[in-house]
Each structure stands twice: as C-alpha cells, then as structure tokens.
Length: 97
Ligand SMILES: [Zn+2]
Image: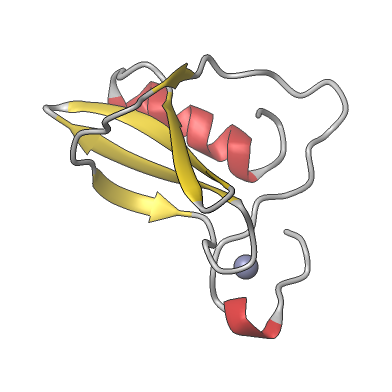
C-alpha cells in the first residue's frame, strides 16, 4: 500500500506496479451499466480508481479515469467470481494493471 493522504485514511490504495506485472484486458465502456460494487479503491486522491463488482451473475473490474473533469471508464470481461477476485487481488498488490 502507498501512504495515504489524511483525507483517505481507511480507503484502499493500490500498491505501486511491480516489475513484470501482468496486464488485464480492458475495453472502453462509454455508457456503463449499473455494477454491484464489493470493493473499490480510493477516489479522493487520484484521477483513476478501480471497482470490483458483479452484474447479472458475472464479475468484473471497472476502471474510471478523470480527464478534464470527464469520466472515462473501462471494464474487464465479465467472468466467474474466482477469476475476477484473482484479478482484483493482482491489481491491489501491484501485480497487474
Ligand atoms: Zn486516497
């Protein structure tokens, strides 16, 4: 975990990306559908954050970036829970981006 700013105490911050980290498959989502979120990284100190959640019985990770006050979103493929949970763990630990 990186050092949190005072405003973000208690929020999740991803570890810095490690050498040799994997790359998840992301596709842009111009009009995202509702996601039931189980975990998410801090939105207060960063221009990018990640959420892990489910939709329609499948699980995925959503990445949101702020560019000039506009939100751009990407999602991984929707997969079974054990796989999406593994991706989330890799992201949090800096083992994937
Ligand atoms: Zn933060």
